[in-house]
Image (cartoon, each protein chain N blue to C red):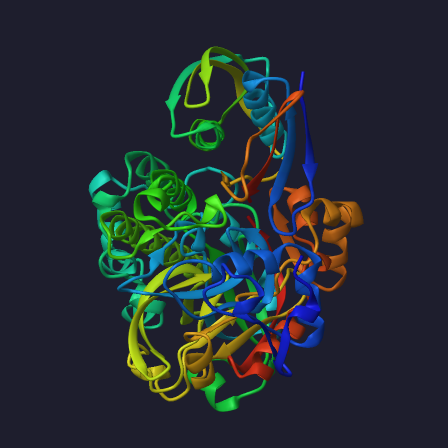
Length: 133
Length: 483
């Protein structure tokens, strides 16, 4: 089980992520990002499915996070639990579980590619993501 | 790691990192600001980000940081760079997600003493008429056809629908419409996000503020702009909302393999770029211009509803409650402009990310009213402090592609700001200074607290000292709606 930690950024928000495998990385990134700015109402569960393909793992990760931001902004839904039917460095297929946004505690406009590198480590994966706010 | 000693001091306000410092840099990097401002740039990764910009193909003269520089993503905030049209690049990360985030100022003929008894009613009325917050619906709902019109016509669309006065458009950068915008270049998802949000402030650092003119530095220019001592003005700070964020994301993603296809070496993936004159470059330019037009229309709609609030609250209380537009500037954009580079007149694409255009007197793009004094430049400070109105200069034209600073510039991370004080405390501090605050988020209020920003006066003194703008007036806030 991985973890995330918020790191200092003068103008925006940033997370450092540690994960055991790709599903863990994508889960930590999503949960870390949403914890930055929303509280979820888990009494009204919502489910969606999502399929993405991308050039490489970094692009897939940023696409994934920006899809989740889209659900927050347009549909008022925050997804924080995931089942990955498939997840490779260039494609994913997942079931998303979550609920309506109960409260906003901040604002994230987008996940960025700034200095983004997903690094394989003996424990799994590590990366840092900067979010535009 | 680059250090202060690697820079050469050119004069009191200009510091230069020679191109030779790093073999990948194509031009030198310059930081504008007093010694104190220059030293502050080393507190985060601003300088590394500026060096990355200096490495991009086709860049001319310098990669430049204005005195409000701070760490961003891709470009530093406060970054200015121009690229040759014929062999340069355009980079969505050099504009950012909030395309055409900008500021509009409206001037009244009401003395603050006459408005003060009605201030709380007025700000409550504006808060009702001008929606704010994350997501959410705007004041105006658009059909698909109307949204396409907005994207291609910007503030002109607002004029055609009765949301503008003709001189509002004259007093807007690019007359509120960037030519070459194409609704067809904007993706379906961006349109889905933008359709319901027209006429909304958004969240984060966006705000709508009532201010009072508290100092005049240039009486002639202030008079031309409609600014007088103790008079009330309004500032609106927002951008292209979810539509702009989506356009930026769409093209950063689409361009991820462009550097490989075009053989462009980039130091940071957020700086992905395509040749300006390539299919991808032209498509991004058309989509970015469309998002910029959306932002011009958005600020125009908000201005319309601010005027309605002034009428609802102040009609019958004062003789003249009408608001005239001082100007509307964009501070996140890439624009095609002609500039003098050495002995050559050159067509370039100027990226301003957290920087403001500052064209000088007699520039042909300025409306007749401002031809003699230069373009008004609006520099909002942090919530509890002051904001400045400046005017463009020929020095800015010669040195910085007609650009200057855009604000105070953050100095402290949001977490560090939250550790200093709670939102309730920030609100009571502001109240003790006579500033009324309305916000949907007390945490957001603490994140945007005045102490999280540089002293805007130091920033403005630096641009004035460097000759990148001249001071016209200072305003102080009396009421703030924080998005």
